[in-house]
Image (cartoon, rainbow, N blue to C red; front, side, top):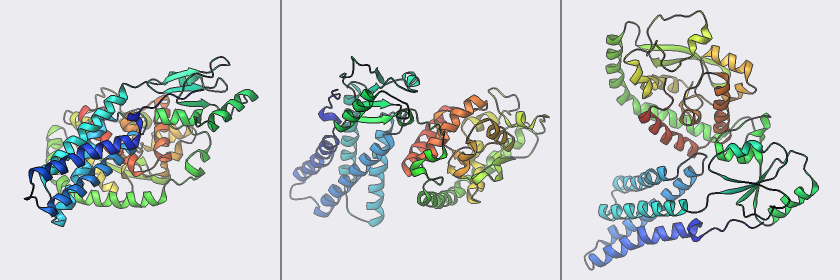
Length: 418
């Protein structure tokens, strides 16, 4: 079986080398010529080093973020390089080093322009083709869109494919096992069906608790500590801006409907310990129901939501008081959303391994929120749970960066709000 031919545009060395030539070397030599005999050597050299570092950092960040499932790489070109060039400028500013803002601007524009060219050039290439060995539980793969699935058979094994996927737990004929071994030796990527599904959908369905990274039940201890420290720093830095906003919103909520400004509800939290979560009240006070589980659910067009509550919920502003929970160590800025205790107990009874999502701190936003939005029914919660498992298994700084970017998008379009 032949592999799909990869062009020069796919090669990292070409993308990076051409980017350095266009966005770094050209502005440097143009400035050298235009300011011949008059250029500030320190400013010129500092600008050169700064733009090289910014391009390399931006490219690295872009590559790390864009490999996650469901990510449209074009959305992250500008933010990645804006952040890296901005960081470089901040370092130069606070270190009081000489540099040229015009030099940086020219490099930034050329850099962003080049990587958009690379992106659109690659978009015109043939989409990924994946060969599927017809054995075991593989039929559901063909429901995943935007992939050129090729069902392999005895007469079609030589079709060009980027990768081969098989249910490696299934009993398959000896000739198929030899085929997989030969393809692996030939350099073709061979993946288990669950790995392939996970990499394309961003969901993890756990059948055994050993299926997270390295079989450990505690994901990323070092990063968890770093993240906790960053949660505290960001929360303390945000308080001077949040307190005046809270005062204005408190007045608006009290004028809109009778009742308290804040709503506190018992949620299931870190390591399965309940805690009292803070929110701005967005529903009419005293709207009671005998069914605690039903009362904990919020549905589309819920008539309990107040007039001021709708925009607060749409733009997730009602969640901001949870900075209190973050400072207390009960929550994080990013993590699986905590459910009301009655709902959590119901889901635990209905869904295997549901409690495993409590192994990390719950968050104000998370992978499931930017991918699926708000859900309440058990069938939908199962899909949400698979997103939470993906987050736990891939617990990392770069996934958190992607969630922050996705959250900014959902805040503006109101995706998943109820």
